[in-house]
Image (cartoon, rainbow, N blue to C red; front, side):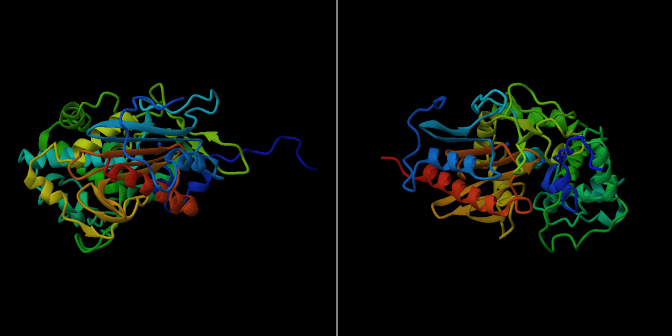
Length: 397
């Protein structure tokens, strides 16, 4: 006899619980335009506004999108949809959001700042700085962690870790022991021999920074990144709550209605690999300084920009992707920008700027879009992002 109970609504975690669970779901670690003044030039391929509205209308697309384009003469905010389906409020540059794996750029900023101060070296090894980690990983260097050529197994794919998150998405992990989930595993390949994106890399980066300074990673972020770049609304929480106001992140899986998943996951299991909360305004300040090399000297910038051809961020950014040290080069049909992407449950992010930091784009969507979950939508998103980059780089008359 059929049950009279209503059908169970699918948990937003269910389609994402597999081998790539936290790369796809947890990390992978999103009115008139405010502050518009002398915006970057017009878009020959149609209105940027129209392109965002089309993304929002696409089946499975984000309920809201906000992009901030900034150059030396002014900024332009382009947005479509809503920040909160319950209220209809529009996205705002001061709304908080999960930046997902774009947080890896901030761990890179910490590490490279310490390299500049001679407190770390790019050739420092795990054996030297973190001797408690498995001896088999000992030869891995800071450089290899930052450009994802370390071979470290990805803790976010470990069965015990995935099972813990499945059982309790808000479980409070010891963030500094996340690598214990893969401590019994060998390296996936000889360090430096190939590229493979791993969430373990940036956990190890943060631990090396702490070991070198005797200072908690959260304090290093404040002293070496937030304060120098004037970030006012950026933080690294441990729990699941979002600061108010915030862009609500949604699981969008038609034919079911969008489900608010903004506060489903705790951040202690993500930490330095993708746990940072920021705003479009702060993300703009960060990427302009970071891509422009404002946090360290030219010798460190040169090392950061030794590119691995064809190595893509997760998800891939616009144009052709190459990997540096905690930064990616996106070569579009209109020119080059440097930055990082990210995706997590409810959010997809791009932060990018020209190599001198003078022109920047932050692009945030309020659903998760990647090659595994929504390949067609990712292709469309990358096309739109490239059009925004072209609008950013186009000379103004």
